[in-house]
Length: 399
Image (cartoon, rainbow, N blue to C red; front, side, top):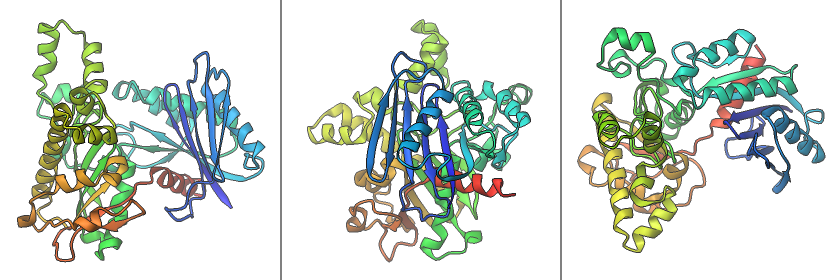
């Protein structure tokens, strides 16, 4: 059985999954886990396989050591790299800029090109590169493939991709809309046509990827024509800890009036804003519990979140002209019944009717939650970015 190892490297963490790319999306990976606190005095490696969970605690100086510990733990349980056939390693890379529209096999030249994109993603691409280098050191004879978060949005039309700032300045510094969560939006949008019985080449849809980070996309016949995130993942709808769209003058005001530095404002907007900035929590389960206790801050955060979500859905309905499907995915989108209902409340005049009973069903897989008479189909489709990355990796490794 040909397997793919999928890696998602953060600055001090490494998520991994060992996946059969030919498996059904509902099947769990052969193994999954997390390496935490890389570079800190104490660290931990967690492995989940066969319904069991195993943890090793020890200092982890770098990503290569962390991955080596992962392989040691996997070997103990019969699924190490010498015991199973790993045919490719797929790496999630956040930013591909304008250089990468498709996944690519990683070479030294490709790695240098990803390194050149660090100014566009200073928090993410360096960590992605470190993870790639560590994995290539441990598995030098296996093809490594980069799959870019921005790739699906590479073909955005200029009217959606470009900002109305000085064109020379924008071109010189790479200022434009890149979009993120692209692997999820592409994977989910590819599932929808079959679920609603339409030709993929004639399907217009809106995909709502609602997690702690959240983004919306408009997909016209398989291609993205707009997306809510922008040059960075900070733009778009209100998120768990991110502000989403704000008046850019707020940044200047906070610098001049509050004396905040650029780094302080960056931290405020990315980590201390959004739902958490208003209510104190960013987990929607906690937010719901607070609302049920009549917490007004939680209720306000929820209403602002829904208001922004509905604005984007509405604008993409206009951009698409005709909407065949609206799909919810990711943690909040797949599991929060109330968010889905609130997002599409009172839109019957636009042919959108959610069935309350279908909407309330547990998240057991792709399903339609609109009424039979709804002109626009509303769906819940669990995302599986890791499976998508695994399939790309094995495909490219075999070419």
